[in-house]
Structures are given as structure tokens and as C-alpha cells.
Length: 181
Image (cartoon, rainbow, N blue to C red; front, side, top):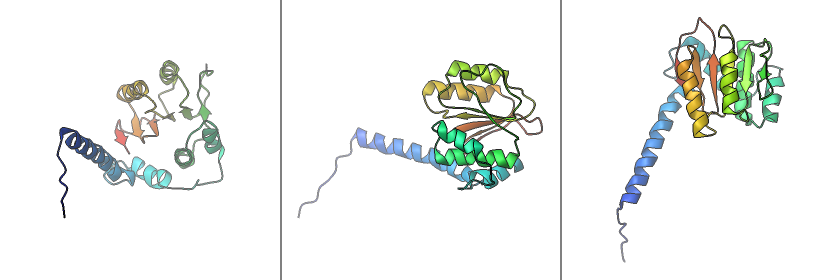
């Protein structure tokens, strides 16, 4: 009986190190998924009441249908619809390249197909007093991710990075914090 021995090379060690780093990044996000370690009552209740629900809470499905038509996944669309219902927003608006003047809705969504220059322009025009903004697919490209992280640094509001979207809550009562779920 012959025993095979595997040669340890730099390539296999490097691959194992990369897997370990990626696993550790995932593990740090897992603890926040259910609200563990979140010390903000608003964000904790948001996670428990909106993000953890697999079905749409309430009878309103308008945001969900609009997001699905834009190509957003079922899980993210359900979470955003539940967020919309939980926060009690009256309406919503999908901001795109054709948007020139911002409507009075308190919940705005920037879909994935909006160019970065237009996204920056729309973000600058948003009122900073009350409401929320969701930027969908922030990790679509490196440039888009860098721009979203710059917006997070620039913004003096509560932000939640949920991988599929980044939420900005423009409320003076909420502290300036950034959560990665």
C-alpha cells in the first residue's frame, strides 16, 4: 500500500490564507445579521422587524414590484419593502438618469443602472433633514464601491451597508454611525 504525500507549495498556502481572510470577513458580518452587537435601538429593531422577515409584512407591495422590475433580487426587494413599511414612509421614488427635480417623497432609491456621476449629483441634491436613501448594488464595480464609501464618509447620518444596498437615514435624532451587516 502506497501513501501519497502532497507537496506543500506557496500556491496552496496562499490559497488557504485567502480563504481564511475571506472567512473571517464573513464571520464578522454574521454576528451583526441578527442584531447581535448592535447597540443602536433603532438599527436593532430595524434588523429584527424588517431585515429578518422572509415575507413581505403588510399589504403594500408597490416598492417590491418596482424593485423587481429593475432587476433587484427577491431577498433585497423584500427587505426594502419591509423597511419601507416599518418606517412608515408615505411613498417612494426611483431616481434615475431622467430625474431632474427631486420629489417630496421621504424614501428614495437609486437603482443599479444609474451612472456614478448622476448618482453623485442626486446625492448632493437630497434634503438632509428627514428621510432615507437606498443605493442598490454598491459593489457592482470597484469605482462604484469607492464612490459609495466616499458618500458614507461625507454624509453626517446613520448608514447601513447590507452588501446588496447601502441605506442612508437623514434624521438628526439618529447618531452618525456606519453599520456593516
